Amino acid sequence: MSSDFDFGEFLDSSNQSGLMSLCLELFGVLAEKKIDRNRLETAKNEVLDNQLTKNFEGFRSAISHLSDDDKTSHINSMKQIILMTDTLAGDSKSEKKFSEIEKIISGSIDRLINGANSEIDIAKLVQIYNFLPRKKEVAIILGRITDYGLKAVDKLEYIKSSLLEDDVEVRLTKILAELSEKSSTGFIAASIADILRERGVDFHIAGLVTKEALENISDKQLKTNMLLKLNFHEDIYTSNPEFLDTIQTDAYVLTSTSGSDSDTFDMLLLLKNEKGEDVFKKFPVKLKQYRVFT
Image 1 (cartoon, rainbow, N blue to C red):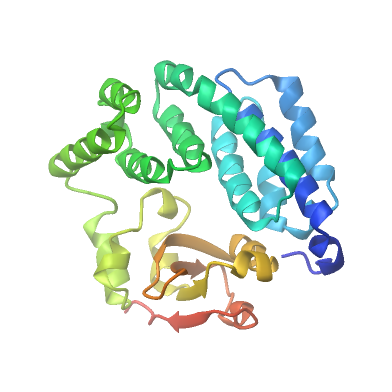
Image 2 (image 1 turned 45 degrees about the vertical axis):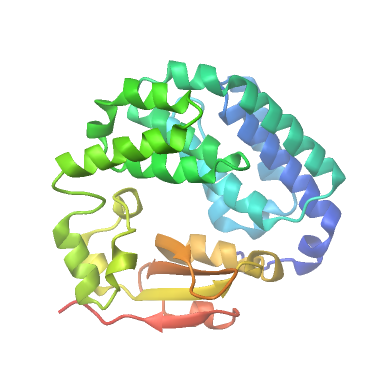
């Protein structure tokens, strides 16, 4: 989180709606099969120049590293945009913009599916489905399929044909089951799962951690950095907007899932460097700290 977070600016609903519209425009550009460099640079700079963007260091960093020829930066930015638009409060203007971008993406998604030929293309489709209303479950299953890496690419044509069918969730679930049967690693290696369970993480949460979530984390960090579970109400992103940026700046998100109480979430976080749990104590969350691996 920026040290000079401007709550006055953020609480102005017209400012939030303005940034949301710019984020939606940028997402629409990134969702295209062939990305227009000039449109990308224009949309990127408009987001970076927005007065609210300076308040969110993690979001700003991801967007600033966006490059037309770096597909990984596209995926990272799409993730950040989805988080940001979930945080911001919209109005009739941003709702109109969302409908416009949704219509364009929905009309072109078949071309994106047919043109997919790599693991990164599948990852892009995950973010697009995560963006579209009523497609979150497809995004979740497809995301789990991508955790199998190149093994999933072997089934690329099967995945593509499944995405074009009405019973897409059933078909993707079958693909996921087949990959799981043939893989000895599953979502994460058994040794990694053992580290999390040794630290006290419940099996059902440890089993949700994906390889993607761990790609920038060493075994030493996983064993020794502070490991927390946060439980919070879903409205925290709007009531405490700096919560999102604190997560992005100070922690690695290992996984999140629905909490035991209605409208709550559990999030498993590995803190970066020497950060302590104090960074989250000012927020309306329930904290659980796990022991260090020995």
